[in-house]
Length: 122
Image 1 (cartoon, rainbow, N blue to C red):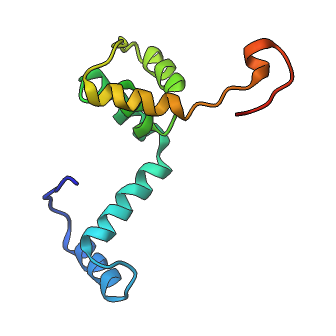
Image 2: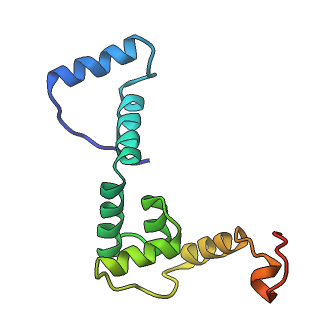
Image 3: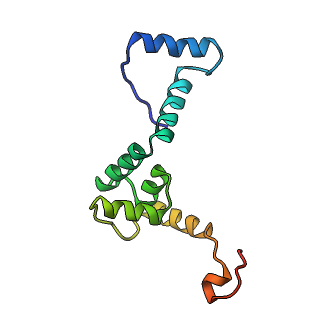
């Protein structure tokens, strides 16, 4: 887990302390994590912009960018293309290969999609 040091107005600090004292959160860190998580849940465009920027700067893989943007890989690929970001193809390292194998294992295929017959999801 990453650590961040920052400054914010005294009034916000008091409100955060108040939520902790009221038992809403277990501590300031819990409160700040929740605030940031809720922000990104409520601001899809900002979440996607962050994922695009990180991918473009080669800080994350396509799979990581998709996870951060809360979309599937195919949608993330289309988003990157819409932002004129060149796709990096291939596996980066062993961890990336493991992630790809795990993601592939979670895919579900229907028999209809495989041979045009009635659908039976595995």
